[in-house]
Length: 74
Image (cartoon, rainbow, N blue to C red):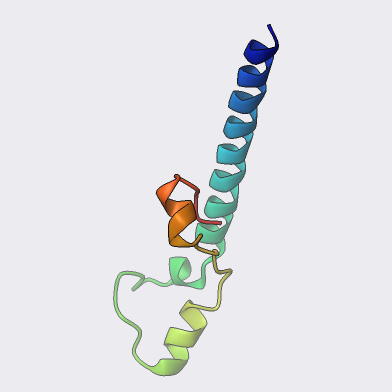
């Protein structure tokens, strides 16, 4: 009985963590300066434009040992 509750709690925690990651990722993508350029798929013309395009929030990438276990960027 106790193991079933633990399994259920872990599944709920995993779902919440995935939703949290998706929400943070969507916020980063929607607020990225590059998304508002008409030439979003084109390379920046100069270094100042490059710095502006990359001025949005950065996601922390987990180290290799955590990536190997399926941890998400964030």
